[in-house]
Each structure stands twice: as structure tokens, then as C-alpha cells.
Length: 181
Image (cartoon, rainbow, N blue to C red; front, side, top):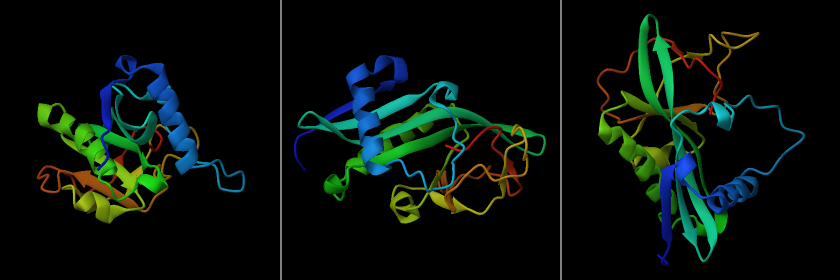
């Protein structure tokens, strides 16, 4: 693995050049597609306690991930979870472990005991299983949606939970209480 610099911190602790580098990385990995259906996503301004991790290699951000606090519910039970999002690696840098590095650093927030679990969606579940997550089969909704409260806020079909041995994760419908991420 080439020598790289790991950048991490809460959003206001990370410099603007890093945020700009992450935005450029996101645009490369997920280029705008005007023909794709619109995705309703939690705006960055509505992501409390946003924690950013990035790998910089030769002056360029090549991998990044983010976590933020989200309160979800299942029936009457409310749970504070870590929402993992924005995980991406430049295509030419994949297979070098950078994606695993940024995800593990975000998931370290779980070690502080502030969250009951981490939850996210993905198109590559096997990557996360290797990091200690598992796929869940819950139904998801968003009771705060202005027009379709039963609509699944996630757009990827694979929903992941960390840690895989999370004993207190409920079986019922999970209300994300917000848009997908």
C-alpha cells in the first residue's frame, strides 16, 4: 500500500480542502445521471454529529466515509444509531484496503457506547460482512415523509447492521424518521 494520510474528525474539524476533495471523489464515483430516478437523501445540513474520514494519497482524496447520528424507532422503542454513508473509493484505488480503513474508523464511534448499532444501505454487502456487519431483513419506512410515510427511504436493496452480533436489534418495521442516506 502506498503511503497515505488519514484525515478524520467531526465535520467542522476537517478543513475545506478535504471537504472539496470528498465532493470531487463523490462526483467521480457517483456521477450525476439525469435519466436516473430522483433519490431523496438526507441533506448534509441535517446530519448531526457528522464524522468524516478520508484517505489522501499523493494530494488527492481517494477514499472516504461518513457517519452521523440518527434516531430511529421500532414501535414505541427509540434507538440512537450511527448512520454510515458516503463510503466510496476511487475505482483505480480499489482493492488496496482504503475503503476498509475509512469504514473501520467511522465504526470506531460504536466503541464509545453512544450508539445501539450502526445501520446503512449498500450494493456491496460482502465487503461489509468481512468487516463484522450483517444484512438485516427489516421493513423500513419514514413516518416524517411529507407524502408517503410507508415508502422505504433506502434505495439499495441490502441493509447492513453493525455489529453483526447486535442482540438488541428488533425484528419489526424500522422507522428511519428521515430520508435515506
